[in-house]
Image 1 (cartoon, rainbow over the protein chains, first blue to last red):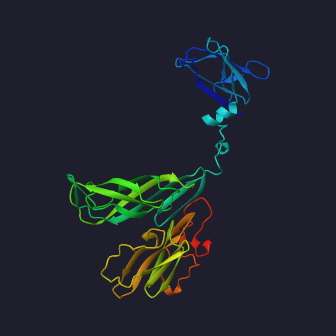
Image 2 (cartoon, chains in turn red, blue):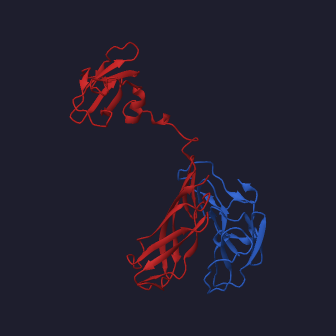
Image 3 (cartoon, each protein chain N blue to C red):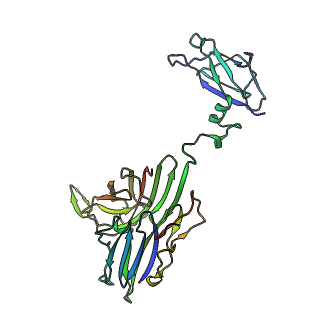
Length: 225
Length: 123
């Protein structure tokens, strides 16, 4: 039978790690010493008590149940730790891990997902929404802006594949590198939500750029409920 | 007039056609967009919206007139869960506001129940 796994770095109340600490594991049911193993397959027995290593680390495998863990150091003498080995086994993975039983908030993690002409989107049960996509725009970058050039006014009405609840979503827009038109010379330097379903952005270039079709990618995270 | 319908997130609910004027319907309101002045050499930017509460590109995404003088427009249809793609090209005379024109790509995984919006609501 596969065993549950317990592991931790032992410290005192002040947070100092405790190398060489003697640790005793007892069954809560009858206070007897538990049969410990060094592996999940019950092949190699482990002494009980056992000592933590030079880094204060202690580990053992044990059959499922509730145990009382005692350490000989003064800071631990009055401290009992009750564990459910199955719980630790789930967190640590291994043969007893049961990730399908992990807790969910509000139902299935993903409620809806899909795509349309404006990009891809996913909605999670906790209200999180993520959208992303690509657009192509013909934008002139010819208005002087210090020693640079930008588009005369922000490029507006770029649609998201799905609206957010409110226009406070976090947005990034980047220039696609597959364009053959001066791919290193044009950057997106300001982006902002224009509405719940569309955003706007400014471009910046070191040189005056005539209007030409260029590609941009966007990614936004916010809430749908 | 030739029509292509693309799936989008928050478009108008449906359209009506009279010559080269397109009437868009959204949230109980409607607005006419006359595209007859669009010449073959013109580059369409967007429609100007006065009444409807949605962005211009959610009403008419693209328009051009071909060398033979025929108007081609790209309109929008609301799509929810599922991976949706553009319709075939249809004639405006055959447009039915209760029809699902966009196409579901069933080869890609998604969550939820596929749905599209027509004049009747989600179907």
